[in-house]
Length: 294
Length: 227
Image (cartoon, rainbow over all chains, first blue to last red; front, top):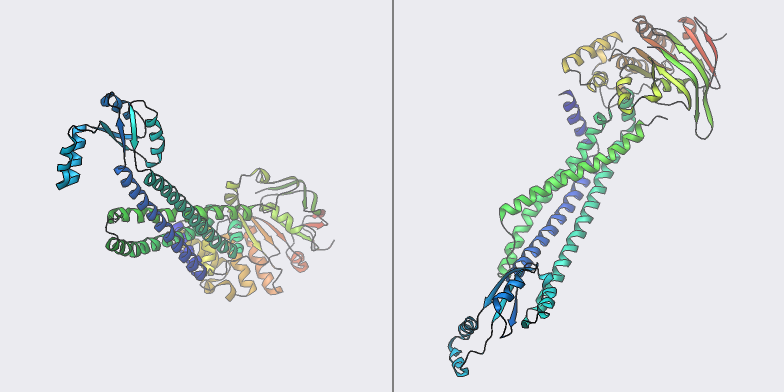
């Protein structure tokens, strides 16, 4: 109880003593966490879009007339990239064509016998594996031809990679800047009280007792910075989503309030943990050098 | 607590010999003056007792514990049994007299009621009741030194180290401080005090250890400042 009172009192003292520095740290942490949050949400949306496009991506494989479509389907189903395989009979294919042609479907009657062949509709688990799958299918003797949206697949794949690397860069940059700022602030607090710290050591205070207020300072600054960033995300993300949805209504953007709330909670927890780790590290280093006998 | 220095040498980098081949023993309950010119090694000797400095060679034992072998986690607990007073008082300026003294006990998680009782008792002991809510910078040098003594007494230490406690004080105030230190010693606490003050050593006659260029050149029970 006494210790807790001391820790809270001293943490408040440290924060008040260096309030300008603390404020700047808080703002930097908030801005960096906000950028980190938005970058992650951007990546989340790209991933969600890719997932949806991948789900709709179909590779069409046309079977030779003398081959058995069911046995070919069984072989293809075994491939790891394949999510689902559906066989389409010539009659089904003709019915689809007629439906697509609408009033002009009567023209098909002129052809006489159904010219269409058995085909397989293959759904994949990831767009990035389609090229390999197509090569695989082309090497199968039962398959006559393969049709797929090659350009779309390539773009999807490169977009996914770009989004991933952009998010990773932002993530690392935000962590680096926030860590550096929290580390420096805690270090300045420790350094400005080095005389008091040496007295504390002399009268028998333990390292953890001396270090805790400084660790709490770093943790609180980072935690509140992350909380401000979370608020910033709520106030900027939803209006942004509304504008995007009104101009590009076909875009499906992650806007579930529960998901965003969970994401913000995660961001705050991450900020607090980052602050705690940085201030623990600097306090540990400082204590080790301050307590070292001559 | 007995203190034993065995063949102790301390060399600071690059090659400053602060203490050389010191062998001495201070028995429990003794009062010992350490005298000598500036740079003779007095403070280094005291810092080795508080384990702020480790010997380059030899060993320092306090109460049969070799301080060199002490683990880092054990040092705070050892220091709580050693009261330290310095020439520059080493008080925390942001805390009041009462808080400076209470702080020592707070580090040990002593219950608040006991902290208050003990702090007020030692404040009375050094005669600072009226000053207990003032900050160190609002006090005179003698008063600050009394706060430092009160703080050192707060944990009822069995060893009291005073590094030139009267160095910044006038004769009258030094005399008051000495009377407090004598009463501490009379209660059975071992007191080791470094000083330059000839009149104090000659007035309050105790064992005298004289250092010169890091070596013990005189060890005289009931001695005077000058041979």
